[in-house]
Length: 183
Image (cartoon, rainbow, N blue to C red; front, side, top):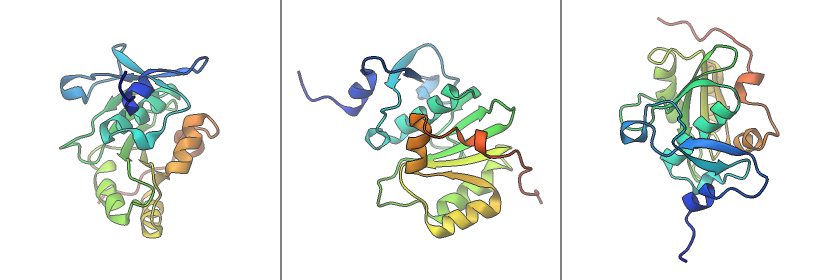
């Protein structure tokens, strides 16, 4: 047998580990459709997000949202997504809009990334909870911008804690607050 790829490893769950369901093909081109029964099984909580390609990372974040009670979970990432990689409805009814960036540990998310997302998450996607999820970390200016705009930053460490069940999902710890006023 040849070498095992990251996707092969994810498709082979360890014994006695609960599974998270991730669609193999979610609609045309694999994007923009709700999670379905036509799936690939990702082991949980042992996903190494750094081994996933950007699309697989979006799928894995969508699976976390669904696992933790979100409804209507859709992966909409890709060209023309206007900054929304995952759309969902939190258990409390809030519309969740997620931007996913699978970056290496040394490539931190900068304020430019947050500004692009901030420019569309509320006005275009009507987010009631805007999440920016990365495998790396955020620069200080990015965090400052996110705080000003009400965007929740989930860095690699927080993502691992959420995935492993050591921390609640972001919508469970962020009180419902109105988004920034629209002009």
